[in-house]
Length: 167
Picture (cartoon, helix red, strand yellow):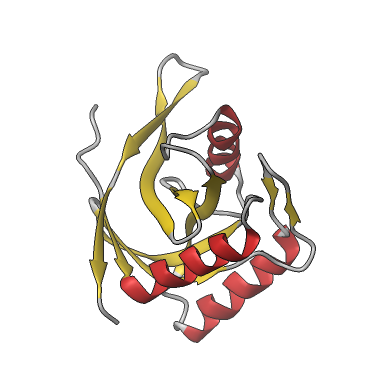
């Protein structure tokens, strides 16, 4: 079963904030969470983002989330939205990179998100900003587990189409 290409709607203002955070942390990686909703099987809307928490660890080639802080922020947005906007994935940077391809670490991370009963995200997004200050390019991915054998599941990660809108 092939997934049809997912369209991800993101406000230009949100992308600007993500780029500013990437500039602020350069040359270290940074990231956070994404909040929104799936309007149908092929369309997701990002309504909010969560930046790095105070206990986040920023390194040249890795970023460690402050999970407790991010979960509290996601919970606030969830309640403010009337419980309609939920955690839908993560975003992070690849400073100095020439592509937004996912690393092996990114793939393991997205698999953990899918399997986490706390995340409740069976088709999470992964937004990667790659490049350098004032020249960050977004790449967007959507993942899911597909059954292969009776006891195994294969990670499927497909590129998504990014659509910007004015808020």
